[in-house]
Image (tube, rainbow, N blue to C red):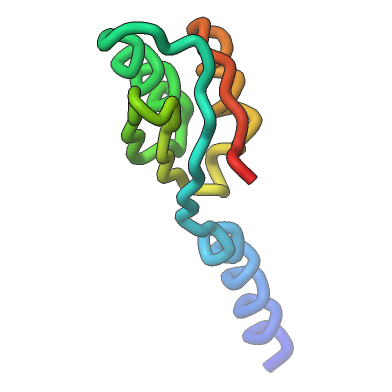
Length: 93
């Protein structure tokens, strides 16, 4: 009986990280977008971060809506990818 409990606990621990993962949606302010091609560059940079599922960039409002798996991606990594492409970004509060 004890072995069954131990095995059950081990199985739970193996799957716990995926159970805790959540899809998040954030809005980021994006700087330096000056032309119609800029949103494509921002989207490509942000989507290159593992765990980012969708990016919609709004040129007029200088924002990006990002959907990502928070177990695989962090907001800092998404912002850094955008910054490295020449477009500093931060999470809108």
